[in-house]
Image (cartoon, rainbow, N blue to C red; front, side, top):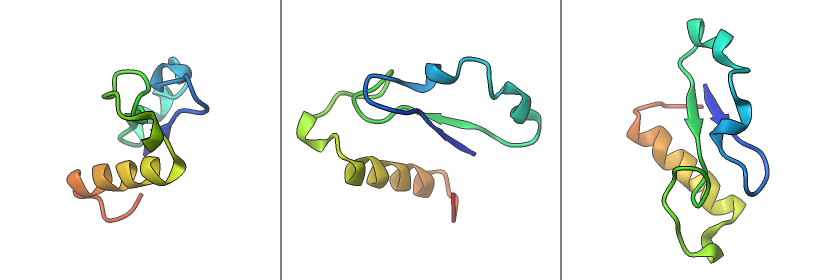
Length: 68
């Protein structure tokens, strides 16, 4: 399960321990969008929904997942 944080300025810590109960049922991937949390900084022009989507798809492919 891919866990995506909300809004600008937030990161995966936004969820705290709220989702830990799911860990016995699903493998959770907490994702920080580029420029958020512990992710790498990038040109702010790339902070768009399109590039965030591309980043998630690249991660999905790198992990060998066919679908999300």
